[in-house]
Amino acid sequence: MIVNLIVIFMGIVLVNNFVLSQFLGICSFLGVSNKMSSSVGMGGAVVFVMVIAELVTWPVMQILNKFEIGYLQTVVFILVIAALVQFVEMFMKKYLPALQKALGIFLPLITTNCAILGATINAISYGYSYVESVVYAFGAGVGYMVAMVLFAGIREEKLNNMDAIPTPFKGVGIILVSASIMALSFMGFTGMFQ
Amino acid sequence: MEKKSKLSILTNGIIKENPTLVLLLGTCPFLATSSSLINALGMGLSATAVLICSNIVISMLRKVIPDKVRIPCYIVVIAGFVTLVQFVLQAYAPDINKALGVFIPLIVVNCIILGRAEAFANKNSVIDSALDGIGMGLGFTLALAAMGAIREFLGTGCLLGFTIIPNFSIGFFNLPPGGFFVFGVLIAVMQAATKGKALKAKGFSCGLCPMYNSCNTAEANEEVAAAKAAKAV
Image (cartoon, rainbow over all chains, first blue to last red):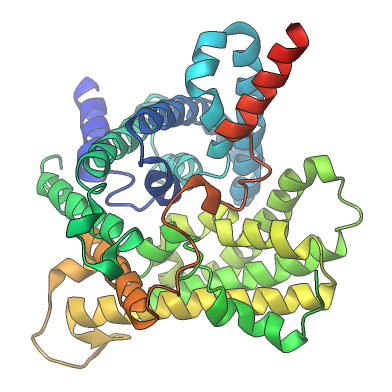
C-alpha cells in the first residue's frame, strides 16, 4: 500500500512530470517562471488547489457514476474547480490572511490552468482509489513546482544575459530551447519506477 | 472599433494574428498533440469545431449574459461543446480520441477559445464571430499541422503513417523535449524571416493570458490593497 503510493508519487514528480513530459500547465510554467519568488508562490498555490480539487472531484465523480451521467465529467469538473477556487480564496481571506498573502494572487489564475483539470481527469481515468488520487494530485503539484523552480533558476541565472544569444532566438526561442534541454534531462528518470 | 471586412476577419486568425505562432496562446495542446500529423489534425479540427460553435452561441447570448458572471458562462458553453466533440470522436474516431486522451476535455481551458470569447464574440455579431472562429481555428490547425508534420517526419521518417524515408528516425523529435525544441526553432525561423516583426507577444508573461484583464492579477490586488489602506487612513 505505502510502496504503491510512493511509486505513484515519485512517478508523477520525476518520470511523468506534468510540465516537462505531459505538457500540462505550460502557459503558466513559461509565464510565471521569469522570477524565482513568483514561481515558488505559483507552485505552492498549484499544489494546494490540486489537492483540494482532487479531494472534491473524486467523490463528485462517484456520484456522477452512480446516476450514470459520467459523460458530464468535463462540465461538472470545471465548474466545481472554478467554484472551489473562489471559495478557497474567500475562506483564506477571512481566516488565513498570511497564506492568502503568499498564494492569493495566483489563485484566480489557477481556474483556467489545465494542470488542475488534467490532474483530476487523469486520476479518474487511471482508476485510482481516493487515497491514491490525492497522492497523485499532490505529486503532480510538487512536480509542477519542482520544474518551475528549477526553470526559474535557469532563467534568472543564464537567460538574462541576452548578448550571447543569436538574435532570432532572443526572448521566446531560447526559453523554449532551454525548456527542451530541461525536459531532456528529466527523461533520464524514465524507467526508474515501473 | 473600425468596421472590418468579412474577409479580413476570416484571414486575421490565419496569418496576422495566428493564435499559436504569433500570440503564443494554447501552447499546451500545441506541444502535446503535435507528435504526429494525424494527432495534430485531430486536435486542431476538434478545437476549431468547439471554437466556431462557442463563438456563435456566446455571440448570440452576449446581451443576455450578465457582465459579472460572464467567464463562468463562457466556460459552461465551451464545456458543453467539448463534451459533444468528445462523443463524436468516441463514436467515429476512437483511435484519435485515445491518442489525444486528456487533451480533448482540456479544450475547455484552452486559452484560445476563452480568449476569443472574451475578446471577440462578446462584442461582435453572430456572423462575424463565426468567421473569426473559423479563421482562428484554421490558424491553430495549420500551425499544429506544420509542427506535427515536422515532428513526425524527423521522428519516424513517415507522414500520416506512410513511410517517406525508410529506416530514418531521430527519436528525440517524437519525445516531449523535441516538442519544445521544434517550437523554439519554429519561432526563431519565423523571427529571422520577418526580421523580428512576426511575434506580437513580447515573450511569455501573464499579460499573454486572455483572462489577464478580468483576473485579479498581482497589480489588481495591489490596487485593491492600496485602496483599502487609503480608506482605513
